[in-house]
Image 1 (cartoon, one colour):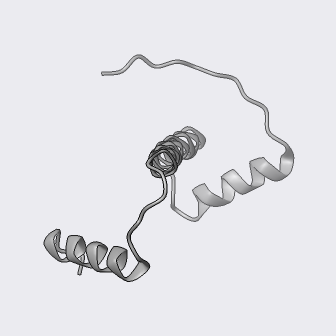
Image 2: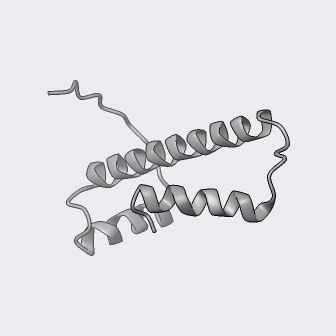
Image 3: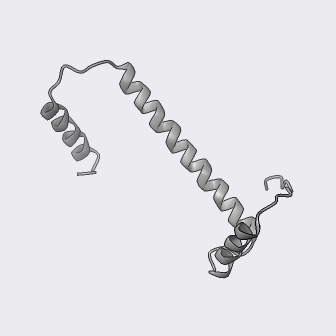
Length: 86
């Protein structure tokens, strides 16, 4: 079981009302569960961002292609068929 770390945080009244509304709506059972969900989603979003940033950097570093747009589109379509996305 992971080590539990206690933190004290401060919210505005408006933020506290929002958290309580999420709990009242049945989406979470308590404040901690809501905040842990926010942290998990933030972590996942950051991972996606850095993966996208790395892909963009790789693309930029690869230089200019001598292929035509239709050729590139055909290659993408073929890859998508192979991996079942099309």
